[in-house]
Image (cartoon, rainbow, N blue to C red):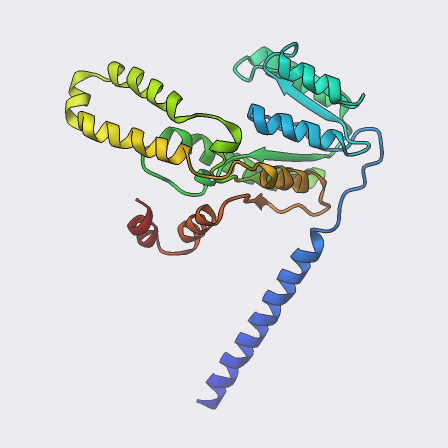
Length: 273
């Protein structure tokens, strides 16, 4: 019996020591940054929403020696002009409509022509790429796809010295203005009219309205401060040892993600679905 207790004691002590060492090493590593030497910093461009993308481009442009490639839907539009006006010579504004294969190809070739070997890739997914939620299937599919792509790239690119990180933001609808209660209602009215009569009958207008009200409620929550997302993106780009994942989330979203990824699935389903 004493031998068993001694083994248990040693296991607990060793586990605690390993945990403290891992935490301390990770904490110290966040203070080590890449040197930015002046020509081209080895990082790729991020394709983001307008609000966060503009803010990130402006923030990175303030880092001496950092070259920024800002992909804009309209290279001669108002947003692009703002970037050109307050950007230094290292700010490159690129015409980029992500629905156009030719423009994506041209943008990739332009960036590659200015970048050295190796480098870093930072993809933006979502907290909903780590957990499912009712009525989020279309959105979730795209984010789970980004998660899988980024994880695979991190393993595949390691041999070439390319580090890959991922940003998983929480609810920043208020910060980005992606949609508002008014825009949700407009889309809902249009969507209901397009639904086949049999599907309308099966689901009922009451159920449909409940889904829409849930989306409206979601759009009014979350933070309007996007600084935590910008900080995470900057850390992923400039830290010498970036984390595989950064999760700029409010406490509710972070807890929900933790429950889904660490506890039995029935617990998540009971509380969140």
